[in-house]
Image (cartoon, rainbow, N blue to C red; front, top):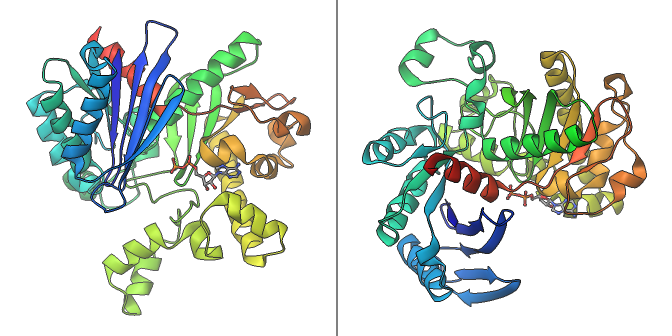
Length: 388
Ligand code: ADP
């Protein structure tokens, strides 16, 4: 069995997979609001879910997960632990077995992902203390994008920024883009449809697109940081790079600017609401700001689809995933509207179906799919691949 761990700043998610038995997820859970008085742990096994209050830090959370797994007689069966690590820089292009040197490099890369890498590393160190005798593997969010060519990943800024400071596009959500593009390829191959050139749209609170040719990522919308690219729940995505100097000239500090673009922009910035479900209801009820926010969100997505189709010289499949991509049929329809010139033709009845299974929802030459993402399973698969 493989245990996967995803350590965030205030949450810790885990899953246990039995990869020998049809990739079954045996147990999963999340400890949320770590460090606050309202901490909560949700644990699920055999279809039964329990919620308990939780108080403590990440170390107590890892211990609690260890205790739960021991009680369920799963801990001793764990053969390896797969850890989500956000930033692998240029060093880690593959899932990697964790050694002291690997830990040091993850730490060295922390300036590129200050909110994530340190806490990912803490998760690794705590899990190693709980499970010292099994291999631990790091699976990097950036790794799937490491196949981008320099023409895609370099920014047109002074060369030394890259050579001295690593300033380039890295991309994120790679585990999800890898998973859904693989599933889409499998689904399309079964029905003898083309699947060479795929655009994946991961639309959750964070949003990113990737252009994938024959399983290899050639471009993605997120960049040096997860702020670049598409409009998101609270992140702006692309803005004029000159905006920083302009806001600075008005007296705004770089910290306030960074916070505004990361936490107070995107859908939230326009309509004072970042949850797409709520925004769709607000639009229904006549809110002009919700209408504008959604129109901007969709317009920017359509431009990303168009630019990646041009970059790839065509498109065989468009894949929607994550909270918005999997559930918001209206958004899918609006993104795909009038894209027949790309061979994209949604079938309204198929688009309206709600289901947890990967499915094709189009009839044109470019297949449109909804593929529920499963980053945990992808991490478990990658981990198993490293230890075998
Ligand atoms: P995260 O990036 O935090 O993992 P998710 O992938 O869970 O986020 O996506 C969260 C987004 O998905 C929110 O904007 C939420 O409103 C949206 N979402 C979830 N379910 C639906 C739905 N049924 N209709 C529209 N949007 C939805």
